[in-house]
Length: 315
Image (cartoon, rainbow, N blue to C red; front, side, top):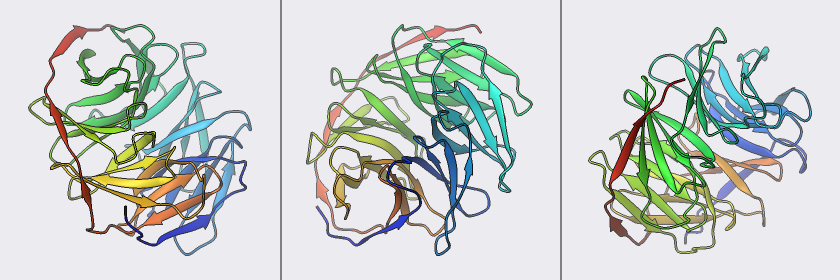
């Protein structure tokens, strides 16, 4: 464990719930406030601003779009939202009722891809509002986070204990995880094509190499409940420990580092590389935290290889 200084920046009241964060095309940090129904913006060193949505809309994950705007899911309102860097908001209703959209990311085809946690579907939304749904081959899978890689999207299947890959043609590949009931949530793709994911119930970080081999890295605190993950330019994965009140990193050789957050029980969720090259995480208690990368680490590693299954889905 390191004692690297962590800076916190208050961006809302304690009840607003900063949840996900990303660096926008304007060089600012954009974040969701899940409890108050707002989208926030912070330029490091300046005062935060925010834009009000429906108070009960539940904005969750936010991502850069292919059109220079930010796109986000409204988990409770079952919509997808779009906000320009100038603050103009557009919302898109989804065809599947009560679908619970959560993860969202821009795909290689110029569309937005998102997970429907309550409907066992992956959705595709064009920038003009056309939605296509792709059913998953599992029921009760609870698809969660999603990320782009090459010509496909990767996503976690929280209740199916698997990660999935969906091609632009709707073909889905399911990869079972070695650890039972690991409950994967966050997912990110590194510059080498490796897929990183968090195992919130197992206290591990997983990595699928481009050759399909899955490696699991047990955390020093197995009760830490790792939640979100991102990768930096060097391919290091950075993750939040929602239950451990820490931010950690892991390299492909199994080197794990964890950093304590200064405020107890701050509930770190989303994480991103900021415009300043540091790591930024959203704290549900009302702040964004900044962590500068360091080199002191503690190492642990486990390696397991698994097989996968394929199924073609139609919308």
